[in-house]
Length: 336
Ligand SMILES: [Zn+2]
Ligand SMILES: [Zn+2]
Image (cartoon, rainbow, N blue to C red):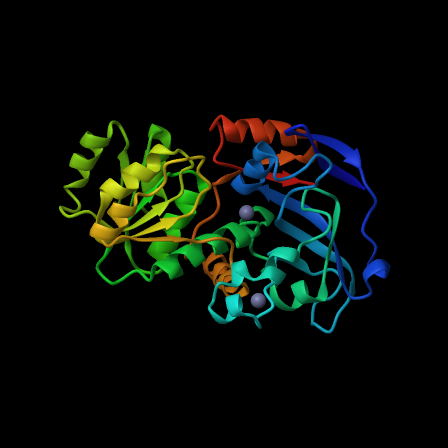
């Protein structure tokens, strides 16, 4: 079957063996209709976490073509899915750190979303595979997983009523984060270095978005919203300067939710955390419950995901990568 195979920080289109249900016994084979290109795929490529030969992609929408399962799914069902499944029965899971569960980290789809077919296990079918409502487009359904990640972050922040949240970085994830915060009924503000992104954020429901010029003048502009600083800061930008800005834009006692990989050797300072009682927390990957909430919010239209992705055929996946890196597009969706 055709697949986009990782090769020296690029993709090459090649052929790999199709996964066979017989090999596994239970589970399902899904014919991939399309798959979103995630920022984490790009990080894995650029840092070498993913090795040459790997097949990336996890924001999959597809059709079940073969199945042996106790679930109600059947061949012909259109589905979207999450790729990791927690065990629900370990110290991490009991503490609701589902994405830290060692079983969660081990489970995955085979071989990856940028291929014509994938295998998903029975466990996936039971927990992280969702039937797609027929009135949703493939591209909309592909947001199940990335939106689930954002919903998890919003839940972890335990946003209080009447609080003000700031999303730093208004790429596709920043937009989804803002929409999630709104969907939970809270005010949300945003900032970014790129003018088009700032304008776009307000179209996606942000109460206001700020152009990040120099730090001091942006912070001064933000005084019109809050004098003491934001209650919650969601850090979705990968630039190292955003850490410093997050600390300055936060009120004393604020939550800072770290939601991006940042190449940085001088992270949060101990004394900012101590004297200002800052809560710095990470949020990584969604639990099955977050995926369920995500599907509900996409289906109900409470979170709008249309208009975020640009569509590329698998043969154009390197263009999709380059256009994402050069900020020509917000996010790419790759069709198989
Ligand atoms: Zn993703
Ligand atoms: Zn577990």
